[in-house]
Amino acid sequence: MTAPTSDLPLVIDTSAWMRHRQPQASSFFGAANELNLLVSCPVAVLEIFRTARDEVEFESLERSFSALPQAPVTTSVCDAALSAARELGGRRRIPAPDYLIAAAAADRGFGVLHADRHFDLLAEVLEFESVRLPG
Image: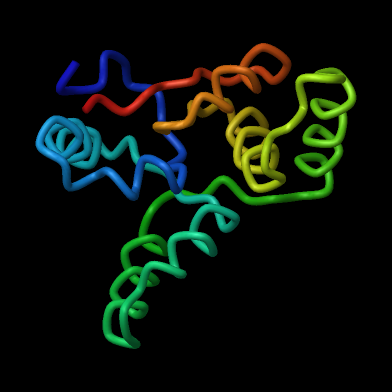
């Protein structure tokens, strides 16, 4: 898959962002961007900001992600993330940011674009589409 197969908005997870320049991933990212399907979540953006090498790159990332539609982290999103952790029981060894990103996507009716198996598991208990980045 080198292009999105639906018009579902996709929250960009850090795992996808870290691979977005790889050949197959780059094609998918470009197509999703042209279709205006990419969505930002503040939790993922905070993680992505750590990759900035300097202030110029930080500001560029900040401009890029703030221009995208948003999947905010609200009280109901936090409640859903906590509920998902309870529901997953013994299978919950998932980083806290992934719960919040998945719950924010589910809250808005969005999918999550990722390269991380945690989102496949989270999609079992939260209502969002888990979309693995090609490559």
